[in-house]
Length: 124
Image (cartoon, rainbow, N blue to C red; front, side, top):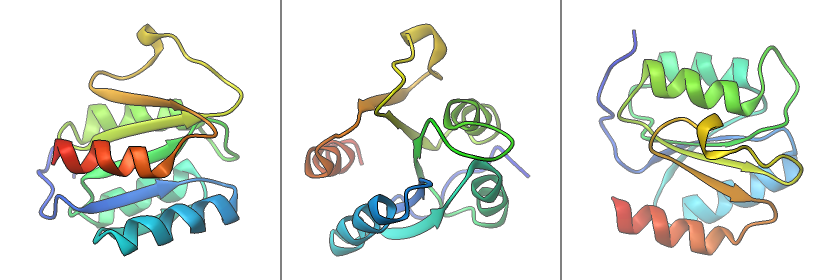
């Protein structure tokens, strides 16, 4: 697998262990016409990415349970699925620019999900 081009530019994978926040984001993106896929940790996200070539955006929290955090997940996505857009968020950690994967967007939590939606729509 890997190195595939997304088939639907409006499919987003939301990787967030806080269920209520993940559901709020999912509702917003679905109401805006996105197909939403949800994961509670990086391991689940990787399995979904391997199964679904339509994922074009990954929005991940940094601090999560599991075998890797969201920053490592973002680097995995960038290495394995280069065309996928990356949005990385955290309320506790502030990675330096050198720690972030190329072509990724970092947001400090809490962030305005409507502003993120506008940015993603403008980039599409």
